[in-house]
Length: 360
Ligand code: PHE
Image (cartoon, rainbow, N blue to C red; front, side, top):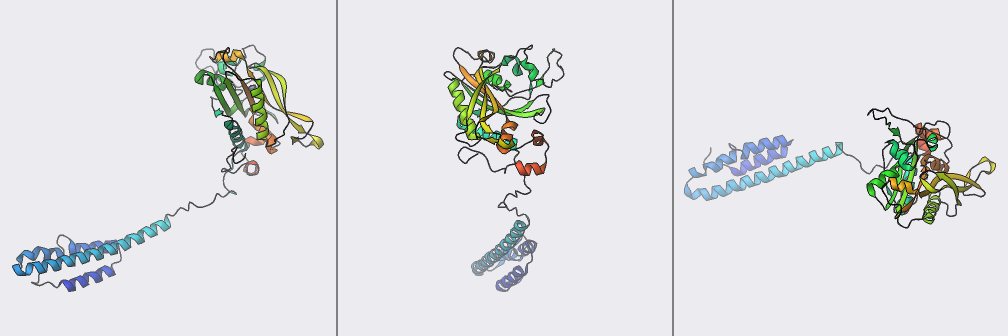
């Protein structure tokens, strides 16, 4: 090593090498050569002790300045390469989150999902919350606790699918024939007061143009100390008018019978069938859309609720039925065919979430 290393010349040489570097690897190599453990500048620094005393300070200052200059240039160059590498990665790995939903190829919400969401939105506004129950039920919840004893003729209408008696207790589970068993489950679990809406799948051994072995219902149950038939009527009239978006839709309650309600009623909405075309809301004729009634005190007892203190109302309706009426879907079977053309026609855009504020 020379006695008086030419720091200026070396600085220029390194600056040129940095300038010519083509990659982060080149930069790393230059750093090692100049500033590494055996690098040129490091060795000069180390040799300071061998210099005459009066030269040490000046030489030390020059070496430090040289090292600082090189470090600065290396860092700047490394920064440039890193930025370029990041830029390149961002270009190849870009996900454009601003892409709009492609409605033509994207999914649609099935009318059953849409209709359930609408029903939930309407009753949600009235303070009901969603409850669910199992599809595979016990005889107790599906029938007995709903005041349908084993020999009751109402069981015939609900002829269903029974599962094998695997436990060997002489007891066969079944696919629930309606959403009403969730009434009992809610009573036993939540106690009164109750305000629930229960959308879900139900099963009956029926199959024709208007009946499917699997279909959907939505149950409603409200139990409180002062609930009466007026509340039942008010809620259901409001529901029908909101659901069909017809403020003056005629709604009629017709006396009926269900083992689990007393009194019971069926709800009809006004329509016209003039010229073979069904028009909801227009005069003269009636269309049945749901069953309801005041909860039978025997059912409250099965649910562990004191009928001397509490009373309430319940209702149940078929989702497919009200969807067919609202959206003019003529054939029940098409709901389950998974035909994309059908879904494109009758389905809903996924972001059109129904609400009472933005509309159903
Ligand atoms: N569970 C009845 C049915 O499936 C409907 C209903 C529910 C009627 C609640 C009255 C009260 O037909």
